[in-house]
Image (cartoon, rainbow, N blue to C red; front, side, top):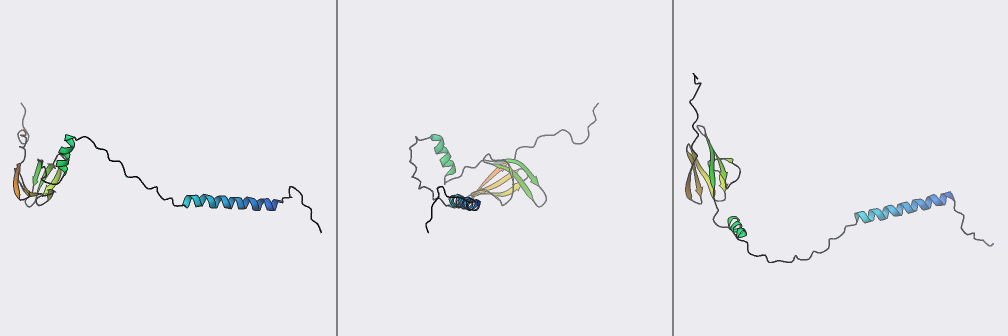
Length: 148
């Protein structure tokens, strides 16, 4: 029995559907294999160091932020006192004012020791510093005033 081959071979609808399904599965596998493949980052080269000219402003900032003695600029914004508690509103080194109670730390090695009616006392690494509060503005006479 001899078989003869016809070119192109006869393709049935069932064979075409199976081939299309196989192609769809292969495309899906390749797509998700690419998406889920973990890519290793390329080794980075060491950045080239560039010498910059000395900046005097940078030196000032470096001494201000570096270790050593802290620069301290405290402004008394307000004082509030009750029988058993006192609160001082202080602006430390130009920051926005915050409320502090006696015993709290303002910054490294600076602690609020006491709040008095006319100022505050700070302890800076064992040295006591007294800062007076600004004078209260004079308001007009108290109560209702008759106008003629």
